[in-house]
Length: 284
Image (cartoon, rainbow, N blue to C red; front, side, top):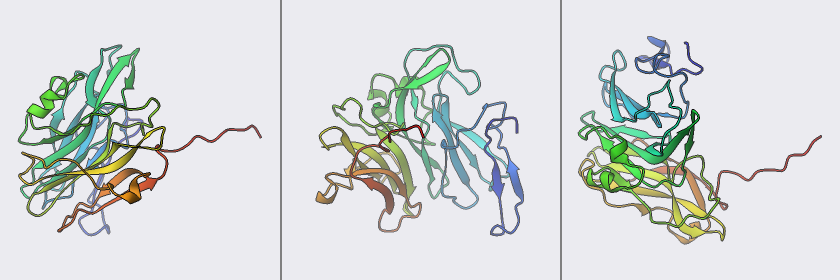
């Protein structure tokens, strides 16, 4: 397809017996836009009627929603946030600038409007290579009634603009130990968002706590909720805040897209902070 990796769209209207759309590249995702596609940087919303949507990007090149009202016959591209850099032409060098880390989540409400959540990140380009600052704070919320975010709003030095715009739904004031495991992600990692039948919104993420094993801080699963379509938020709640999780690292949450009278989440748990411990290598 002219790319190192491509993102292809398939559609079956008969439960998988046949595929009436078979491996198409959606406009805006092909070789004229991206040299390659990051396989971890897109996330689907649960469909509502014939409306489907997914996010892509939310990294140093911006973040956008691809949305269809006819099950993928046609698509529109909606910018969520923009940076001065777009896909195929990274700059030689820059100052520190705000962006995302490359993970996001989205959901559709009963009217088919898209709601998006993603972690705030700071990057810098030097000699054509991007570096990031993994202890960047801030969990960002956006919906289609809000203006497009940019590097001024997200900001590399303050959360005030996000808070003023109603886009900040998670922040911490922590002293982070040196060498704290990063998961190659942000402080507010691996976000999830779901909406119930009354258009109440629920967001989950894996976030640093004040709990420690004496060396590093533990992550727990935090959940926030909005009962007015994202206009106001109830505040972050640590759902692992109990005696059984004092020495628990909780990561990689997955929230069920269908919410009844409860929010359903699965996650991975370990007793040591971080993704893994490196094993010693020996010559054989």
